[in-house]
Amino acid sequence: MEFAEYFPVWNKLTAVQQNRISGGVLSRTVRKGALIHNAGMDCTGLLLVRSGRLRAYILSEEGREITIYRLFERDLCLFSASCVMRSIQFDITVEAETDTDLWIIPADIYKKIMEESAPVANYTNEIMASRFSEVMWLIEQIMWKSLDKRVAAFLLEEASIEGTRQLKITHETVANHLGTHREVITRMLRYFQGENMVKLKRGGIEILDERKLEALNGG
Amino acid sequence: MEFAEYFPVWNKLTAVQQNRISGGVLSRTVRKGALIHNAGMDCTGLLLVRSGRLRAYILSEEGREITIYRLFERDLCLFSASCVMRSIQFDITVEAETDTDLWIIPADIYKKIMEESAPVANYTNEIMASRFSEVMWLIEQIMWKSLDKRVAAFLLEEASIEGTRQLKITHETVANHLGTHREVITRMLRYFQGENMVKLKRGGIEILDERKLEALNGG
Image (cartoon, rainbow over the protein chains, first blue to last red):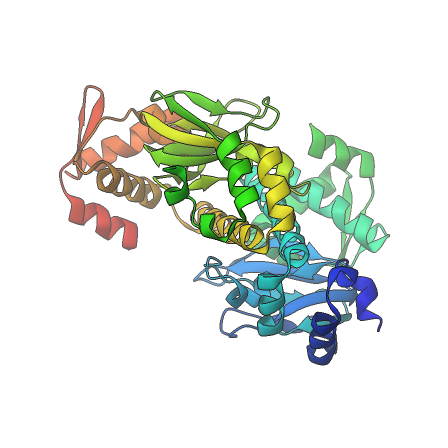
């Protein structure tokens, strides 16, 4: 079963536990933009990315968004299965950023195995610690870093993920990642364009001067 | 041993594990204001509060602070023992907000037991999930809530923790909790005073109108 290869503690499971997971896990293909989990859904299950990319974000009452973390190949999303731990007292939304293949591990199956298996519980701990580190990084960004640096960092990250300087991304999308308004991003990008760091195009942003963006981000 | 009473999974440990903890745990009394852990310290150990109150915060390069969470009686601090998990990739500072009695569980002892015991690993998971929920709440506050509401909420929280409307707290302290500058807090508190919500005193803030602060916070 291919799943086993993507689940690092598979060999530490008993045969019974392996069978329980094999029998319960669902394989799904979702299209770019698909909503996989939101606050209204009960407990979707743990999401394990086989290929593609997911984005986890939170929403304000007014509908503003901010990206909390992104999930790439082999990443596991715990918080779409908040019912596995009673202390998870927040809601996230998860959507596909690209066409994505994933496995869904039902929450009740995972919860039962985690309760009896120290390796699975410790694996879960490491995943949570890793997300925690990303969220602490985000707080530092929001608190201590000005928006021009955050926009520069985001454009560089996008270019690195997509492997191109031609970003097919709207100002709205940038705003939703960074938790701000579209108008604010448009103003910032126009300033970047004035400084010859980017070129704004129909339906996208071209990075012209990576080093200048890096200097801004690091400065 | 009194420690056992404060450690919820004590009865799920083997006799050998219980002895290892009993033999390693340190009992400490620290004074108000004492620094218990910071980024420069290697791995202080897990802190279990017997009585008193701790504050965990992060620092910017310029020395600005923001409170991440507070720890009360029976709370356990994991992140002062970041060496127990390799995925903990951030640093916090922990100081005593009041005179505090605590136990320090050495990180290596805890780590070894967590690796072999599913109940301890799951207990650790619940603690991390609970801190994660506090941090997500903090992000929502920072992102979507204006500062007047956050100051009102903080004053009400202080009054509730201390059991008095006479808060012995400086503007600097409020600023350090909320991640802003003292001048900004002073301006806000003067506005609150103008609205008859608080009275500013030498070395403190008196809450005059709890309901008005609650309305501001909730509104």
